[in-house]
Length: 229
Image (tube, one colour):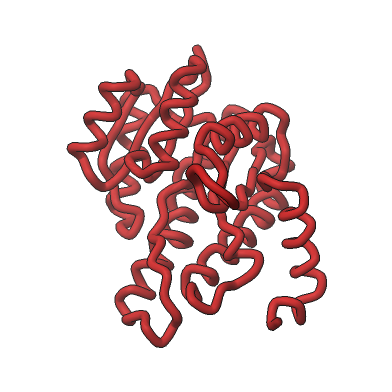
């Protein structure tokens, strides 16, 4: 039986692109997102192995999702933590409930879903967790304070999962996503999907879309004073 890939946030631009890519290459694809109507339509379009609406801000919803996947024999070999709240504001313009929701979806929800799915991967002795981060997680943006914090946490999550789960056969990929689309400084969805697929197959630890971006982000990490310029 072919590998099963679970994609969260499946009805967004990136999620839909990944779903189409993996389904077109023979993977069994499981889908989840909040909008059940759009999700059902996408599932029919690609012939999804399973789908169910869920909310990453709600732990009970995630438990129901995993139970549904198990019942549908669609326990994922690959989990792509793609869903995100992309609210982008300075901290002082961000309401308290917006901070709470953004961190619950981008960090807590991703951790909780990974916690629910990782045991089945461990029992099989293999699996891959793909965390969709952002350049804002490497170089915080003053106009995206809470979002930058959340994506920095995703970077740390990937490193911690490698340390904990790597010895148990679980591979973790961290994706430094940048603007997706056409035009200068943007990356096409086709390139995004192909690079993530390659990282899964070749067991690469991270994905950057330009070599200069990778080394610039590493430089910011080594010399944080550069970020204040």
